[in-house]
Length: 98
Image (cartoon, rainbow, N blue to C red; front, side):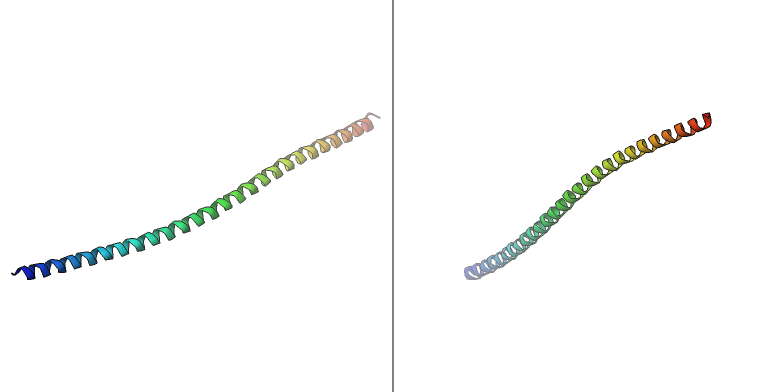
């Protein structure tokens, strides 16, 4: 094989290697773009979920306050009913004593 043929063969090999490298770089760029898009989508989803959690926390706090208020109201009603029952008992006792 002549020196020219060997040189031509080496250039072809170099061109093929360069083309393969170029393809790998393009695939890497596409993968990077996809990864960035996926990351952006994940960040949007995380933000949406954080907002949803915050909303639920606010709802939970409002429900907790409502339950506390209802329990307080129930105790007040119970005390009033017990007071009325005692008054009724005292009236019936005084009627039966006669």
